[in-house]
Every structure is written in structure tokens, then in C-alpha cells.
Amino acid sequence: MAREETVRLGFEVGTGEPVDIPIGHTVACGQSQRAGKTTALQAIVSRSGRRRALAFVTKRGEGAFQGATRLLLRVALEVSRIEVAESVVTVNADGDSLQGRLAILIAVGWFDSVQTGHAAYLELTRRGAKVAKPSVYGALDKLAELGFVTKEKGEGYLAVEGVKDRITRKRA
Image 1: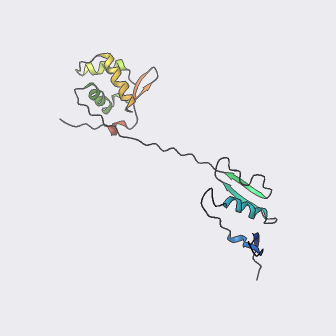
Image 2: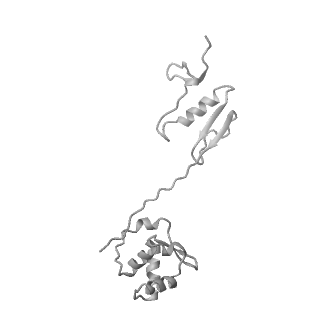
Image 3: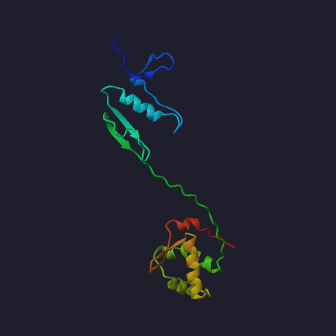
């Protein structure tokens, strides 16, 4: 029967007896930043004779296994994640209000291509609305703040992709 390979972990407190662990059954677990898992693994690697080690170091700036001579590969892995908490703002507007009329233009696809504020003013007046041109720009800027349209630099306003799914038309 083959002799199981072990690594001397250290010596038992009190008796001084050697403490060896089977190399194929090494597990390190414990509370992060408190248990000493990395320290223990570094000690095991340094005492393992001519064996080599593979370490996955997953935190930026981690000092583990720095300067190790028998380390085959040190992989530093960093995964970034962004969590965005969205809140739903409901804008109630009727078809007679300026914001409501602009929402209808968005819903029917009029803003699927870039349109200037002046063009929106002309379209609203063509549809019979009595509005002041500065009010149209202000209402479009407000819709841009709410995420329904974007302001395209020097060109006008464009409906945000998927915005039509967020506009509900109700019959009065």
C-alpha cells in the first residue's frame, strides 16, 4: 500500500507532537479576515517540500503568496458590479396638456428619429394645439430628465429605446 503524502502543519501545543495533514485532503474554511485561511495555506505551501501550488487570489491588492518561489500561477480576479436602484415615476398627463401631447408623439413614433424642438412645436400646431414655442422646449427638457427622450447635442430630441412600452394611453 502506498504511503499517503502529508505536509507537516506544525506541532501540537503542549505535547510538541508533529501535526501532519494529508496533502490531497486540504481544506481551509473560516470567517473572512479573521480565520487565517490564507496564512495557513501559505504555511502549507512553504512546508510542502518540492511541491508546487496554484493560488487564486481574488481581491485587489491582496498580498497573499507574494514572493512565493514554488507558485505555478497567481491569478488575480476582480469582478466589478453595478447595482442600480430604479424608481418608477408615474407622469399623469391628459391629451390636452403639452406633456400629454408630446407623450402621444413619442407613442406614435414621431420621435423615433431626431426631431428639433421647433419641429415638435410645428407638429403640435399642425395637430391643432395652441402652444408657445418656449413651453415646448421646456416640456421636452422635462421629458428628457424623466428618461423618455434624450437631448441629442445640437440636433434635437430622440425617443429612448423601449420608451413606448412605458407610455400607457387610456381613453377618457
